[in-house]
Amino acid sequence: MNAPRGDGGAAVEVPRERAGAGPGPAAATPSELQRIRERRGLRGVLPLLGPAFVACIAYVDPGNFATNIAGGAAHGYTLLWVILMANLMGMLIQNLTAKVGIATGRNLAELCRERFGRRTSIGLWIQAELIAMATDLAEFIGAAIALNLLFGVPLLPAGLITAVVAFALLGLQRRGHRRFEAVIAGFLLLILLGFLYDTLRIGFDAGDAGAGFVPGFDGSDSVLLAVGILGATVMPHVIYLHSALTQRRIPLHSVEDRRRMLRFNRIDVTIAMGLAGLVNMSMLVIAAALFHDRGMDVDTIEGAHAGFEDLVGPGAAMAFALALLASGFASSSVGTYAGQVVMQGFIRRTIPLVLRRLITMSPALVVLAIGVDPTRALVISQVVLSFGIPFALVPLVLLTRDRAVMGELVNRRITTVAASGVAALIIALNAYLLEQTILG
Image (cartoon, rainbow, N blue to C red; front, top):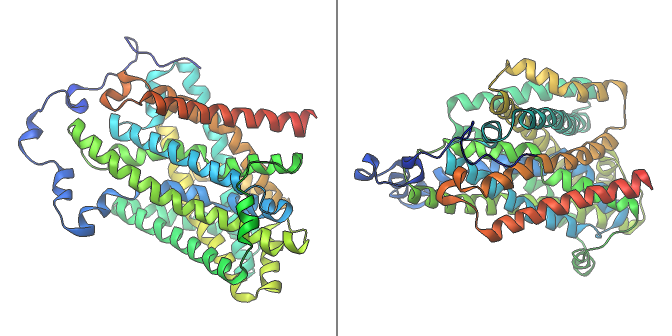
């Protein structure tokens, strides 16, 4: 991959007024950010939060259900450390991508087009579109399974219902981004409450769970699941999306405004990603306590639902299915949003939303129509997503370390080192997966 061009060519310098080099006319009057902060109580905070809640819904999508349940049922608490590490990585990554939008007024896809060579940019776009299809596969299958479990809807019609709901949710954006963010945050709350209810009903051994935070594997199959968990947690498409959610959310006219916004962004990411991490850990803990400790072989979402009903009761099974449904509906709309951002940013083109949705959801509908094991398809889709992470993460690191792009908000050296380490770890884990499960 070519390094960002610092001079000449298609490089786009940060304007002096955007980088805060001079006070400019906006310094004479309070900025919109300052006016918001002058409000009392939550009215001065809530308008600054929200983008991370939209992004984090991808961290609790149906792919997480499949990988976390399979991991907990097969290997107990062994892979809890993977979820913790993936969540910490996600916090760093989402902070960086949100900072791109705040610092430059552009999203990551737009910057890749402007700062990298044409071939590199087109290559990144093509792989991002393939990743979008893998993302849709997980989201549609998860929502379809939930509709089937709750209402007996056949899987293929359930997938089509999911598409309709996704379009309806995206329609909220026409009434302002805050309504869309509020609805997505409501879905996240529903998912959290569902798993909190099941965790309290089932219980678990705290000592055994604590041991799961010590890094280790349990055979090559656990490595496959670990990569799946990573792919289901650190999602490539929201690395692009989060920068678009912050790029023009509030007009920012100075470096000081941007620094203030970054502080609230860190709060936003910490809260949202913290909740997502709790959900993911509770999924694995529940599967470990309910299935692994009883020696039950449960490797499908349908099997987990049946286990909840048989071992705990219909209330626990319904809470699980409702959480899955909320996850599928919310993540499918967020996935479509991310796809539009990627296409518009990389190639300056948009296509009708219905057509784009038909293209990216086709693989999911084929899987539902031909009767492929949906849970296995979910797990494999997450492994595919994991292989797509470096193609979004490496450009993110290269751009955020470049002062010509980021101005005064360029990464500190320690941040660049940490982000580079995350990228290297993910690439190494994928290489190990190949060696263990394909070449071995």
